[in-house]
Image (cartoon, rainbow, N blue to C red; front, side, top):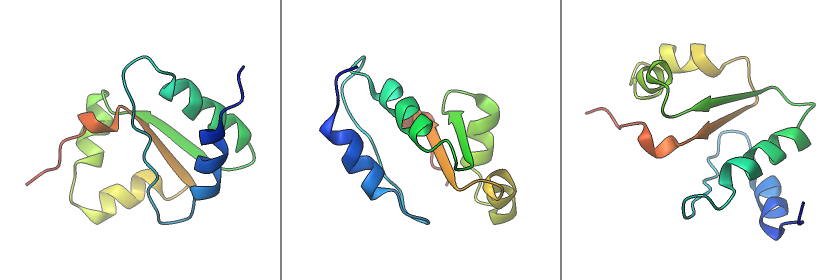
Length: 90
């Protein structure tokens, strides 16, 4: 694998209670990079979900705090692939 400067920057940016976004063109390795970062954090509790999964969409678009907390409270990090597919509820 080719080392990526961005990987180190993302790892440095990961902080509790903060969001780090990874944006880019299709098929450029974003999911691969996210999995690689997840592997580097193997001692951490990580929940990785797909924004295309309808169950995940229902939970993450909820505005009920207890639903969201119940989904993520056992984890240190939440990784969402295809997060842009999760609608903001009104």
